[in-house]
Image (tube, rainbow, N blue to C red; front, side, top):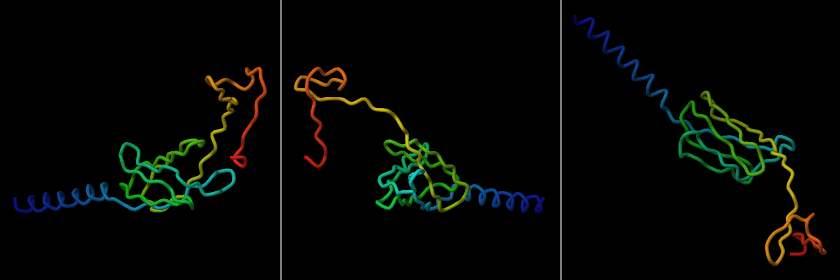
Length: 132
């Protein structure tokens, strides 16, 4: 009877060890780059799927985030396709985001609303960043 108690105690201790391993937090670091030019992307939102934990990449495209050991990270950036990356214990990852190419119609702001450039029947001038 005493041997059975010892075995059960050992099994309980081992199972607690596995549970704590599964919930262990690690610090993941990495870099987010443009897939075409390999340029660092600043301001990419890096978050844990299904959680409120998130951060943004710095001006060099680098991030650091405390996450569960086997979390799924979500990388979102305006003008790029969202990427998902499931961690499997690694503490450093590099991610490349691909551009979400979409054609935009030119819109002209007129004194009484907005219209597509093609439907305006008058003269239209464009003002760029340099002129401002």
